[in-house]
Image 1 (tube, rainbow, N blue to C red):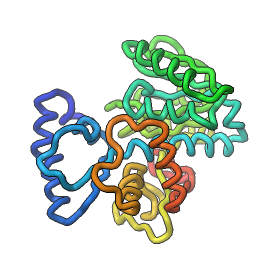
Image 2: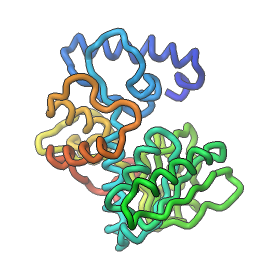
Image 3: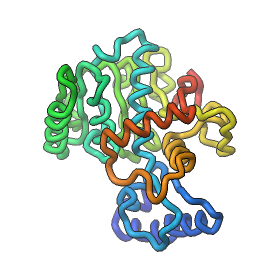
Image 4: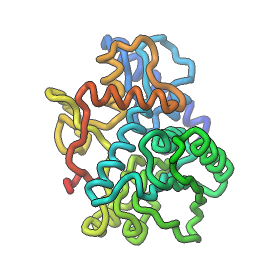
Length: 286
């Protein structure tokens, strides 16, 4: 995927040779809804790109992912003996589309005491605008919000836990970085920290995958590298919800707002999606 989307010409080639044929195949199989995964939403402008066929409908997966990332952050806080309402939580990749959605949702209703929005230095103006928006729209006793530009030269700020939604082709966090926080929830693809760093710090910090345990009877029959065939990535869960709710047309496209994420969060609970055991990016149970 990294090779396909590296420049406009190869991105167009990806759409022509992989994305559009996949939609045509899904339509030929009688599928009404396709859940996009990993980098695919980027390839179709997050569902806004005109498509050769009106069917099947699509959903990006971002609303379910944002909802589950917040739930995992609350769950990981409790597992570490922390009060989620009192922690400092960092969001890496906060200026991206998923990053914005996650940041807004975490700053909505039940919130940590502080949010630290982190991205590359050239995204600082976007982070500052997002921080002002979260403060303005959040609850009266909402979180303090700060921003930080990662340049590899300055030390990271102090925080208790982190949500990782950065777009990266090469892991950028090492063991010393991971030891700075009590937990890390990594929804980056393929990963934000190296396998060596993950394994070296397993006794020191919680570095886990974001996924959902499906309702009873769900069997994905796909090697997701998750604990059981009843577990799935959250983009899959969002497609399942759209199917069960018989959603007409596209479900979630673009950057989902907090109301959409809250609705999807309720649907996840209603349809039986919950947590499985803590699972590393390596697939190892913790």
